[in-house]
Length: 185
Image 1 (cartoon, rainbow, N blue to C red):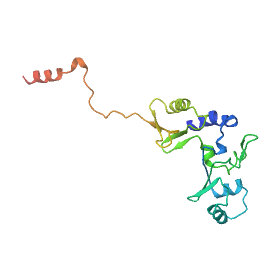
Image 2: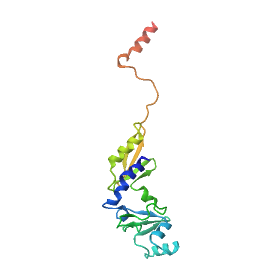
Image 3: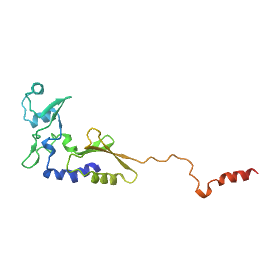
Image 4: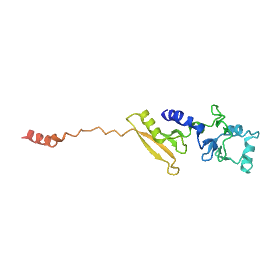
C-alpha cells in the first residue's frame, strides 16, 4: 500500500511533464494480450491470421509474439496521445496492468522500483516504506545483477535472539563459581 501511495502521489502526477514518457516504449516493453492488441491497433483480422502475419514479418513492426502474449516496443503505444500528453485508455479496463504498476510495484515479498523512470526517487521511496513498516523492519536493497536499474526492496524483520540465559553483569561474573564452592564446604 505504501508503494502504491508513493506512486500515486509522486510518480503519476509527473507523467504529464516527463521528458521520456514510458508510453513511447523507447526503453520499455509493453506486455499485451490479444484483446489489447486488437483494440489498440484497430485490427479487423482473427488472432490466427494476425499471428501468421507477424510470423511472416507483415504485422506491425513494434509487436513481437511470445508465450501467447504480445510485446510492443520501439514505437509509441497507440493508446498514447502525444498532444495531451497522456494515455487515452488510462481509466479503462483495457489498460494493460503493467501501465498501472510501473515503475513501483509489488514483486514477490518485496517492492520493485524501476529507476529508468525519472520520477522515482529511491531515497524518498525508501523513507516512505520505512515509515509504513515501522521500526521493527529494515529494507534490503537488491539491484538486479543483469539490469541494475531494477532495484528490489525487501522488508526484513531483524532476527530475534534465541531464548536463553542472560549474561550476568560484569561485576557478578565469576562469583557464582565462588558461591558454589563455598556451599560445598
